[in-house]
Image (cartoon, rainbow, N blue to C red; front, side, top):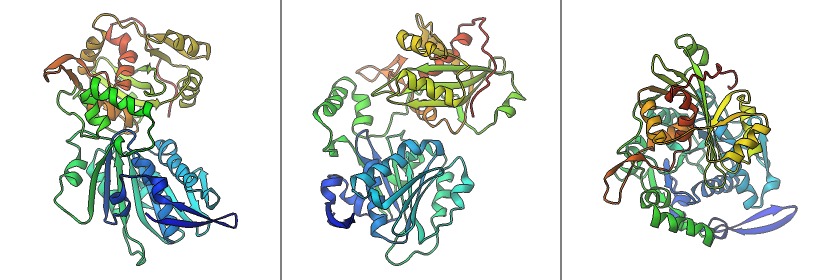
Length: 429
């Protein structure tokens, strides 16, 4: 990683990549094979390093264009798009790039090279990209674990085709947080025999020299108090798959008009509060109690939201008039949301409310819309807890469960056989 000279406002500045990128990613940075796969724990700087790589190498390689993909388009703005803008600023080349919001796009002004952003929820737009300048030779798939079907990845793989100039190479980069070991990513890349076209690495927070002492103390406490979580969120190991709480679910695309024509649906909305380390999570679903169907329709899943921002997000999503049942541990937040116009009431909870809610939900077939990527993430790793001897306990893990809790809150009137009847859903996508 050598220094590079960049013209800025008619002055030449010199940047030193190692000082900007840091350590731990030399092999990743220099690899030119077809598949570059990085599984990393929290704070492992995998996404930021990837963003820096694309900005730097697109400026270095005239003719290279990049396609950035996530499972759903709406998640790109606050993830990859923002990371790439950060990388441009980090490299001090803001004056050379133009970022467009609608549609999401980044243009390298000196040459016209572009970074395109697409979601798998619109596959035609993924496979029909025609570049204006040069070649579409690179692809970044962020949070690749969200892609449950290997055939969807094959479709993406096939979209990077055709000839390139001699100074370019074709490459797909997959970055993701740890996932369960039955995911196709493990078998295809991490368990593959030695192949010059595959780099599969695992990184963790220890290679991030920019974490301060307070950040490191978070991981140290996790190591001591929750070794199971530390193995995954701290060290980047594969997630746990034994003892799943819910196995009665499937991912399926559907429309509201389609399911309304077949089932007697009532809406169920639940809210779990978070802020700095945990997201605020809104569950939006429909229940047909007679036919034992639960349709997971939409979600909110964001960190750093004030109560005002929670209200604004719910309103933008179209749910401001719906009844929402929220975590009763936050009475002040509930009062704030009421004053802001939301129809929120606290969950009643009570003795054994968690297990009673789980048992109720286990009797239903859960159909999850593909755009609910965070719900799919949580339900796939939501397991029963274990004691220090590895014996399963009759309580679920208190981790990665924000939408799982929100779902229970939203379904509480039905699981408790209340006479409260929620109005048929009005808002949303």
